[in-house]
Image (cartoon, rainbow, N blue to C red):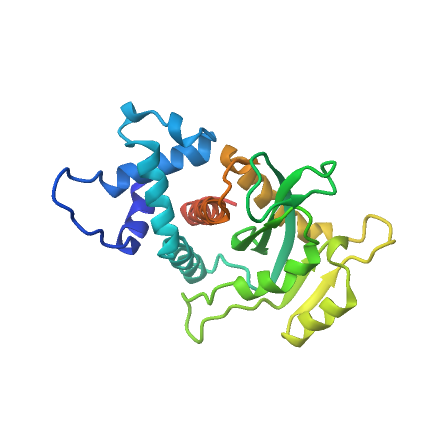
Length: 263
């Protein structure tokens, strides 16, 4: 983990009560263990303690507590504000899409997937800006229709500071594929002051929307580059959401670290 990411995260971590007895592991070491699980997909009980991460249960508890405290949402807002201050956040448009992952152990927020022969699965719903920076992510069952999460994704976009004026949270336009084709939702998007650009069912491929939609597909590929997010092993939905939010923070931090480098 880079020093820059830790400098952003450390002030956001809640203060832990000091019990008498053995000194707890430093938060940074535990976070490295959480990132190790996220990147490798290893199960918690097999986390190598000789690397200084502590036990898998210690990392699991710390991830749970930080997620309940809203650490990842606040970290994401801080990173988005810095991108916005550098004029690298494209709020003129946003793009939505979803991806399916198999849930081998079941649990909440799972359902029979129509694209995986009815096996239990979950969906990662993602909305990004025009520069493929994640703005919000949601978790649902694998049988949920994509269009049902369109408005919740828009509502989940945080108000982003970083520039003079009132923090902005709504883009000018919204791009989506045929899975979001529904006139009722188009009207609701327009009522929010957003221009919908959603492909119609029954139309031929090559509508031109792919010129703008590819950014969300690349962000989903980045999410699935983290092995823990390729298959869902967690029965608890909050732990899966914690990994999903942390992954969005990592992608956003990568965008921030690329400032000053050629695009």
